[in-house]
Length: 605
Figure 1: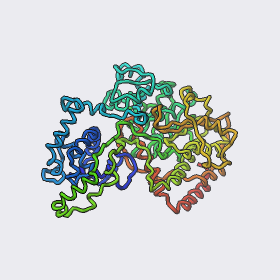
Figure 2: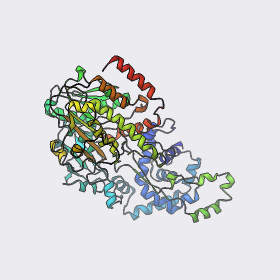
Figure 3: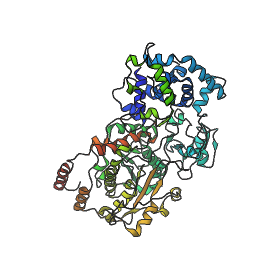
Figure 4: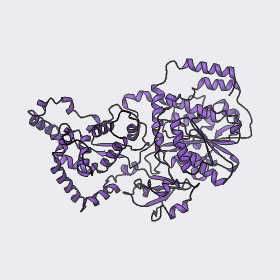
């Protein structure tokens, strides 16, 4: 019976633990139930919750059973009516008794609901539920909240033509993303993306997870915006090797590898992928291997990009660097196959009074606590929307809103540090910097600050102008934005400000483009300057910027690989955003001084 209590507790999330529902399950160490069992229960109950909410309310279960919360009532009713094995509890358990005594009424109301929706059998009803045919949000806002299933064809193993003739045979081609966003259920349609080659948009409920093309790595689930960084690099054969400085889970790495393999099939060019976390390194290796990119990608496992020496012979052929460092994750969106739990309403004030009177000689004599009757914040909601996968946006609770500025400062400082480190690589001529954040501080703010550093000026780094960008992204409309009061005047060159913003690319979530919230900017070097930053300049940079987050700050939880998607990344992002603040030591300056003093003695690394 711990299954239902534990599931309800994770859903209610009274401790406001960050991350997606799935992340909270698999990170919780003291569960008696199997994480997969909890996941499956909620995923299945969510599909039926719109129907079961009405059934439970019409039977008045919550008014009669004070031990049941709306969440418990929904989970138990689902298993009672729809699970093959029934309620997973001993026959004498109090929760099982509480729901089974209403079985006749619940079954009758469920049958009425099936007939009312026009389905002659339970099998037909179940098929419609699984296809999402009963979803009713056709409003403009509902359409905006939908997110396509983005699928990138992995050109290392396959081609767009091959996939259209096999995996997507029988699908109808449509001309706009709008038709994808408004598609109901799992309608078989697709749209070829006009900005990114070999990218398809499909209705979100299309399930490709068990198709041969997915399990073999011929197709990759990757948000459109996440495809921008590798494509914006505008890789050419003469660019040599590519570094991905923050590689796991591997979508951008394998995208860069696919571009390289197309330009130099069987050649010697490499994509060097850095990942500092051991657990995520294993995820990265699995994805690289399944994508068929293991002959192109060299994985630097448990290795920090910031510790890489820019002048090392290992990187003398590196001409392009891709950076997608840890960020607040505020642009990430959940897909439409996320949990949407429609909860049965708690009793009204009148029924509460009536119920209380009828129970005076029953429950109260059994010592029921008054606190048990008070619904939690989660229980009071008639609908809960949670993300099953790791695509949840960062949540900033109201009581922690005052930490947002401090959090963004910590993150943007680290992001600036890793970006300027990339600018030091001797032969690098191209860099893309990206985040899945909506905040100016992590996006344009980092770009302007990077341009103002001595390493950027001496090495000739500038933002790639819009007219120089690859065609697909040159025509992308949403550009960088400015926020007054966020940067000092000394950092910003007013003459070039407009051009820099025009060179930056933004994606907004909840728009007709169907992307997540995202930011990317490309940097290029003019001329053939061989100026190397002076040792004194590097010390100055180190004084202003902290070192990379410690392993404790970076999070050390291993993640279960969930296929080719951006989903596995978000637990990391949220953990860093929170832990950078919560674990920021008060005595940090002293250890930092020791590190710097050591660096002064040993010289430039």
